[in-house]
Image (cartoon, rainbow, N blue to C red; front, side):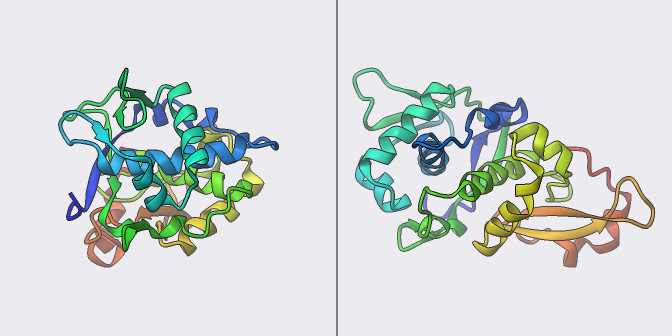
Length: 230
């Protein structure tokens, strides 16, 4: 399992605006939603590639994410509430199924091997669950995974569309993007604008997924690509 570059993550719920359900509110809800996406990362990494079922102990969740057992529990409750995971009756503390999992369709490549260092997801080690930027960054990361163009290996999506899919306020987007880039979760690339012959737009490459496909290897071949194609 540990040698896989990426795993399948059901993505229809993201493309249908499901990330908007994970909002920031003072008093704990925001922290629970950060924990939810951290826990979902571990479930996706552990899920069987054919069934989407993962068997994970709380100890494993805690080691991989540095979350407390209480926060893991709240994060899992949030995922179940928005119908992203299903828990097996009678085994709710160790068996989880990615909802609407279909190995043939409706999934995106989610990075796996590149995210770990000594059994821990490296990017999560300094998460404090106290900053809205952490939730914004994780929502943005999952969106970029879902919107990655399979031909170009870039997620080419503007601020307006990001807001539409996530409800992240535009004034917070630069901070969220910087947060992801500084933790080696995405690379930010500068590409020709889709709406102007002289403009430049940002595109995002998810670290750990098809790393051989980037600006250096594709170059001018990208000029004729329809970046709107997912």
